Length: 331
Image 1 (tube, rainbow, N blue to C red):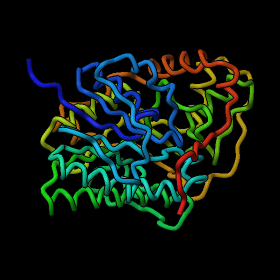
Image 2 (image 1 turned 120 degrees about the horizontal axis):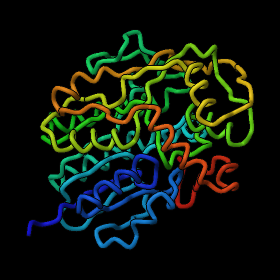
Image 3 (image 1 turned 180 degrees about the vertical axis):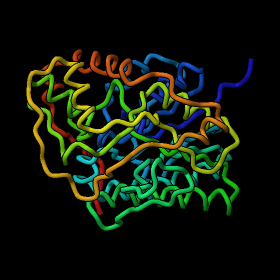
């Protein structure tokens, strides 16, 4: 019987991190789930506690990381990811994208482990190229309100490539486009949970801007398949993983109204500063190198996601953003 592979997943209590824990536990890896719970929820993976190949480590990755014994893989997914989060905790966002990735890369070097980092379509900023290919360098305002997240991820890519070229660390970079599914927080400020949350609470659906801006939504199961394929590939340059099916926010609001039977109206507010006008991945590289493309269409994915949100309690439905600063020092 072959030895069980060991994988460290940072940001494991978050939306994507917890789904990664499910995936790798199911595939019989020994999973070390690391999170300081500043934005993550332990409820996202508590169902895994009885599993013998799962362990939780409550730790802040901006501090020194210790893992005993061998380590085969690291997935660095620790970071605030929603506008509400990184606008309220900007210093933590920058620290996890600099000190946090530095610690993870140092651990990967020491353990001779392969590391995959979660980058984002936000490295393209408000793009002047459409759809966005991996060769596009982006259009980002480093000192704007979104800069703390955008630049943290851009730095994360830069230091990862530096460790790859200078130290020979085995690295992978995934640029994640808008992803949705169960375990998203209704209060995290992103358009899909915002619309569904408003529908469930009987509130008007709020569109920022005139609704002509576009997004492309990838169901979380498809993203997990893409990440798994990339981790086990030989590709070290950044690669887009997302669904190229593009839709305007106004049309998306109509889809949510049809899905939820909402009788409320749509209201419009000012577009936030530097909010991207267009977002659609070019996934030619993922198709060619990983033989990957999304399988779940938006209609089916939305039904699954809506069923999850409808199952939440009234307290969860009305929960406001919460930050756990226990043992977290802001300098």
